[in-house]
Length: 213
Image (tube, rainbow, N blue to C red; front, side, top):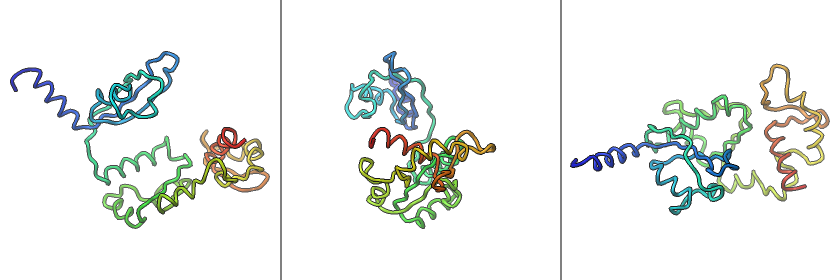
């Protein structure tokens, strides 16, 4: 290499063969708490895209520009193998931050095929996932039929509208036993005696108030 500029470019290019996870925040003072997280092999170029200097920036960062970096985490290998991605997903789903959430995993390949991929190194066994997770299998159309039209369906998350506010107001003690962490998983409505997931109840309250009322 003939000069330091060429050496620097070579090191830069080799570094960006690795993925970089980045955290952005708005540089506008009143929006300092607005953040965005992403991954890229080229953070300088990606920041220019977020700020509209180059095409194809994320839609979520079209407003509140300009954006600035808060931090970068780099050194991740650019491994696009499905086993690697499933291992990362498994680590995420079993983490304390997410294992109590009312997550829904919809698989669009056969469950047998997913198990064969996962069992190669015990990456992500569906049978070991937290019991409060919902697991379904089918096409994308099946997913759409399961989620429904948020503006028109009568029972959101299986919670009838007539019971919704009553369940939310009366069941705090049913959702938060003394030995439970602050974020509960589920509880029984004291009136209809149906068991609902706490996350579904909160999500439904939000949809009722913002979209349907």
